[in-house]
Image 1 (cartoon, helix red, strand yellow):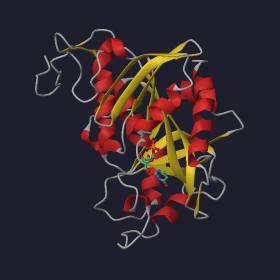
Image 2 (tube, rainbow, N blue to C red; image 1 turned 120 degrees about the horizontal axis):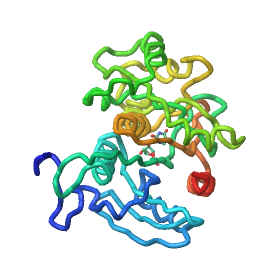
Image 3 (cartoon, helix red, strand yellow; image 1 turned 90 degrees about the vertical axis):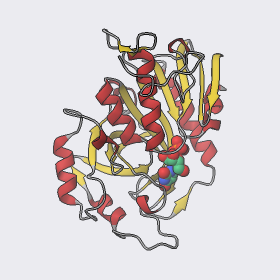
Length: 290
Ligand code: R1P
Ligand code: URA
């Protein structure tokens, strides 16, 4: 039995941070960083049948072209992803009354619709990038037993390639869900590549404002990395954690990002909202095929 202190259930029967009960969510879940993006997505829905919000975690469940979907905002960063993925999994795989793991595993499909910075010259602003794998510089994975989850060959190649400060967490690479990727990767609008994730927007993504960086050439090192036919295309703050926790817990995950900044040419999108709106419409129409 999982103790009250480890899995906190609110007096109304909802999980602690997300404020959700099992019946409030669909099997296909869209995650977004920005809480205001939830309604930008559900504005395309036929109907919304449920909504709640606690802190940055806003959730709406409804139907898009007959497909039941839940949209939830995670806020920024991998620490929030730790909460969101664990609590979503608890909703479907732990009996909240008996506080025991259910006998039958329930799989969720988790699709992120986010924004990101391109690092390769061709990954320009307003493009859509599918994270073929998540490249984690964040260290979250190392807190969990994760045998069989990491792409060992790619991870070894990356560790051998990088020359970075040894005090930083060891990087890891986790592949996306192949079934979800198949919906997106052959579309000519989609650039497929490894999505890098780190635990900050500035120094951890190689941005220097007033503080000099350890590993000032971090982005250059990432740009040069190749594994088989893959390269690191972009950087953001959630994908590796979504991929790794989802895989450990037996869920499918895919991350789709609209490129709003390009680090190679120093550009920022003239209309990031429009880029995200296009990605939302594009992704929703793919998900009805699931
Ligand atoms: C940083 O501006 C935020 O934007 C990106 C990053 O991953 C980080 O969360 O994603 P979202 O637009 O989904 O929040
Ligand atoms: N989000 C990020 O995390 N990084 C970027 O460069 C752009 C959006």
